[in-house]
Length: 248
Image (cartoon, rainbow, N blue to C red; front, side, top):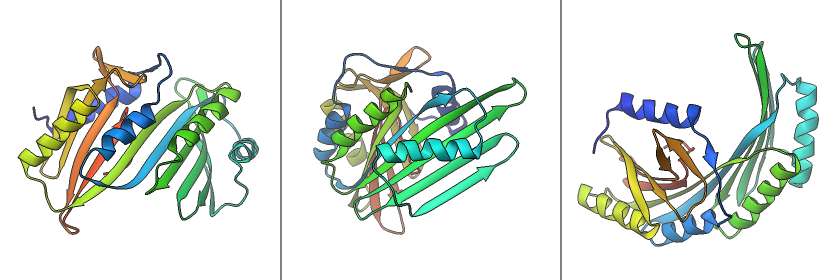
């Protein structure tokens, strides 16, 4: 079924603003995702492992965030940075470091936000890792990040997005066949569909993955999307749990 753009945005706002991650018994959702992607016809490009959590309930200073950042980069065994950025305003402070290599890109961001209306403040930790081409390190990195968050008493929210491409533009029939195959392989039922001229995005739920988001009494923990790039004449596939967090 098709959804217009305003409804699609409303769904995403609901998912990110009022939904909570639920966790059951430990399973390897990253392995489930990679296996499902590898069964498709798409050439893998990269995996994005995005994690975030609330660090404390205060409006942290930049100096405090510098120290906190060093603590987490030490845990990640990162000492040299390709980019360091600071931002500060009356309601927002950010401290970001980036380390890039041939095989991966790691971003560690401390973000502190003050809400003057409610007189509340929160500081968040965001660790974003992009792995290029080879995915063997995904399970290790996921476990490592889980331990870092747990050791600092932070409830981690995790998004994993796999991206790949193939030459040419898929017909509607070909796209639907691939999407149905992916959902079948991951034993997922479809809950929402969003479609435009260039983008086709499906939201579903599978019991093979423990973490999920709830919205309107629906569970969502897998997101599959296709995007056609006319200039490159390539179709891109994004497969994520629970939601795609990269631009596409």
